[in-house]
Length: 362
Image (cartoon, rainbow, N blue to C red):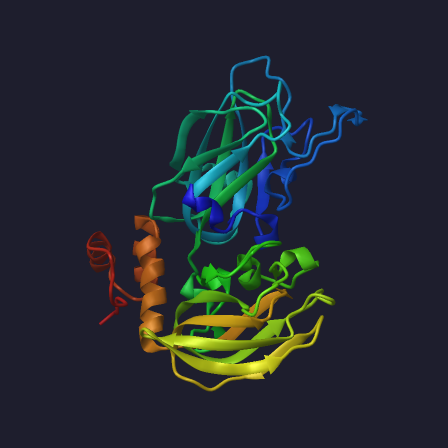
């Protein structure tokens, strides 16, 4: 289950939303994508029964199934799904399946009913009070998922782990955050993540509390902690933001940045003093890089790391081709037609994927 370490694309923290559910009588659908782990307090009853931190439908008295539709906060390629039935013991669904769709724009629930839904997880048995994991092998980029439970019951959380794939039509490739998760950046290593995940560093928005950043254990040796980021694509970093917001007695004392050029590491920011609970900004000048390593001295916590700059020509090609190669066929053809290619030419080029160069209209 290597996919568990990947970002949860459906999480409310990343902008996910539960657009619809055919029933939510006992517990609200929005609970499905809460980033926090489910909790339970016995003998807490409301007007409709025991309160549950999850989505729970009424008992069916006629044939059928229940379902909930989630818009992913970050569209991307899904590598694994967890259907968590925490605390649902006598009222969990015995089976479930998950479908996905890729839809441009902002469709309504009614419009999504008519979408081209593709299976990600076949009809599978579930266990109660359990994180039920399902690996997914589908290279396409999706924007929505639909959880179906058979016939009814409760699910605490739906986790959709995967890799975000940015739509370059909405990006200024000459000026963007190269380390942003939503643009396709990722974490490829760190020295320690005792308190929280380093993926928080590159997540959208500001951290609201200390737990939404990256924090290491206290060091008792002479070494220091570090984290390495794979940039969205090759680019030149011109401004770095090291944000220690909320870290007051546990911020690093100093930090430095290095970038990778090929197999070599070059200094981007020398060891620099940091202040607690502060957004630090530094102007940088250096070569185009593919990775950035942040060292913190000796340990501590960081809320966010932002690395603003411009993609190189190779980086732009990489990012655009990654998007085109991951689109479902009909969307890839539509994107090439929008870019000026005749429909037949677009269809022929899409059928010959993967792209290594950006298709151009002549």
